[in-house]
Length: 144
View 1 (cartoon, rainbow, N blue to C red):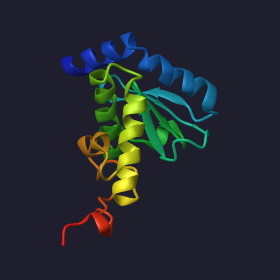
View 2: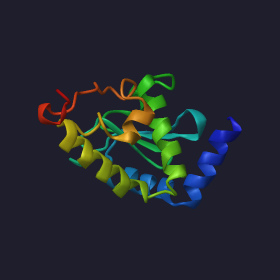
View 3: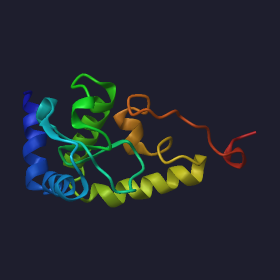
């Protein structure tokens, strides 16, 4: 594992975001499996709560999936995208990222009707890698 990934892993353990991710995996996932992913990530399948609506999301170093953990390849673009979110947790000092992300998602929704397009967390993680299309600003916000 690269040094940067090891540092991210340690920071996310200390800031308690990985612990929260594991708690979510234990309480909100059913039978989807848990496995080690690349770069210190943990992939947990079987997430069943209605929020967030995404098919995959990250809390600390834990990537939670709605399907089986084994369905997400270690080389997939989606897992790389989620790995970038893991790094964002380290930079945001852990669970503080959750309200920051929520605020950014809300602003993006106001700007274009989509949670991701103008959310800097999603843009920095790579919209296309996360399966998002970049939507334009709402018509009344565009310059004529």
